[in-house]
Image (cartoon, rainbow, N blue to C red; front, side, top):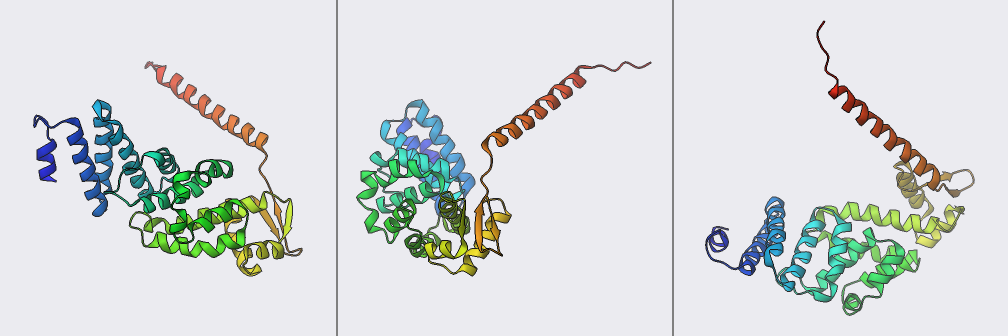
Amino acid sequence: MEAYDEVAGEGKGATVGVRIDCAFAKIRLGMVFTDRELVSKSVALCHKLVEEGGDWERRNRLKVYEAVHLLSTREFKRAAELLLDSLATFTCLELVTFETYIFYTVIASVVALDRVTLKKRVLHAPEILSVIDDIPDLSDFVNALYNCDYATFFLAFPSIVDQLSTDRHLVEHVKYFEREMCVVAYTQFLESYRSVTIASMAAAFGVSEEFLDAELSRYISTSRIHAKIDKVGGVVETNRPDAKNSLYQDAIKKGDQLLNRIQVGLLNRIQVRPL
């Protein structure tokens, strides 16, 4: 760290490119030692330096560096955007291999993207298609989800979780990923039905009815899935939220907040004079 500071310090005469490269090196050191504060500061420094005159290649490398950092802090949506933006320009082999980069891109995308965008930007991307078959079960995992082949999706799921469990950046978020993917899969299935029997849904996912009942109960109770279970009839009934009612409630909430701010502002302007 002292050596990098010496090279890239103010008044040392280093070019902007050299200073960016030193900041990249600090990011890698921070990732090795799980020093997220160092990584965050170095990413912010890179953004500043890039605006001062960073070249096109370093701008694209910064996207990958920042995306990997965002994955480690569970910001999958922003990470997916950055990873997808740099698909055609990836050169960060000093940070991750191309296969690992594609793995990160697909994992972040299945959590963050809707089904239509997933097909357009991931399933049809030439860069992803070129290596996805070299990554164990990844192709089955993402294609089965898109094609609603939930039994194959659940068969590939454990392998993906095992790979996440051995990744230094994603190991802390395995449980989160499991929950999010289950919600995505169950919600996608239930969107096609007003009601469906637990038996037929369990058969579609290749799991037991007891397991599915426990899973759905957990996500329904936390409002992650909008449905209810009729235990007597053995049926799952979807309960989609009313979009108009949701907008109405949101408008009321924002109106109340605005009125509160106005009242506080008026009170602050009133000067109470002593009798």
